[in-house]
View 1: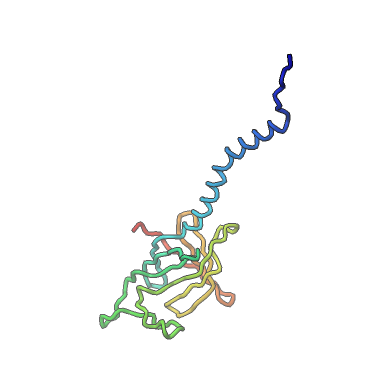
View 2: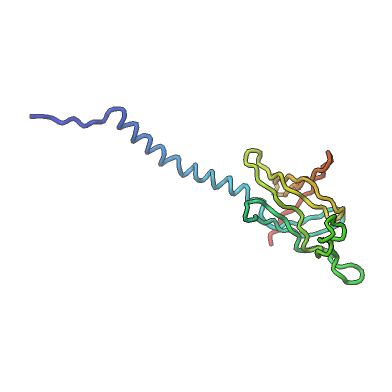
Amino acid sequence: MTIMKQKTGIHGGFKHALILSLCLIMPFVAAGAQDNNGKADSILGKYLVVHEAEESKVEVTRQPDGTYRAQMYWVKNAYDKDGKKRTDEKNPDKSMRNTPCDEIVLFWDLRYNAEKHRWEKGKVYDPLRGIKANLSATIDKSGDLLIRGSLMGFSQTVVWKPLDE
């Protein structure tokens, strides 16, 4: 009578342990990947911007290339004393000076840096001064978006408050 031994050994046990470990770990890895994307997209939405006596509402959107862009969609004092809609008269690009004040693009080409937990390498435009600058942004613990423009060694941070619209 021959008794057949089941081949278990270290290799069989290791293979089962590895498969079990992968099954247990993969959902967390996938959730972590989604969480990184969620952090990048946490900049999306509508914001109230109060800057140097001007009040506006801005929407941040993700572009097809994965960068982020912000465009104004409302300005408190959109009309001048003659009842005409104000335009982007200080824009250094003369072809943009007829853009209505509530359609001005404030930043573009902003990218999320997951290692630094911030958005960077974008450009920001200040329509009050007609200046374009380098841009980085973060979201603080209260949910405010901190927009930091830097040009020639000078920087300014403007706080954008999230809206529930």
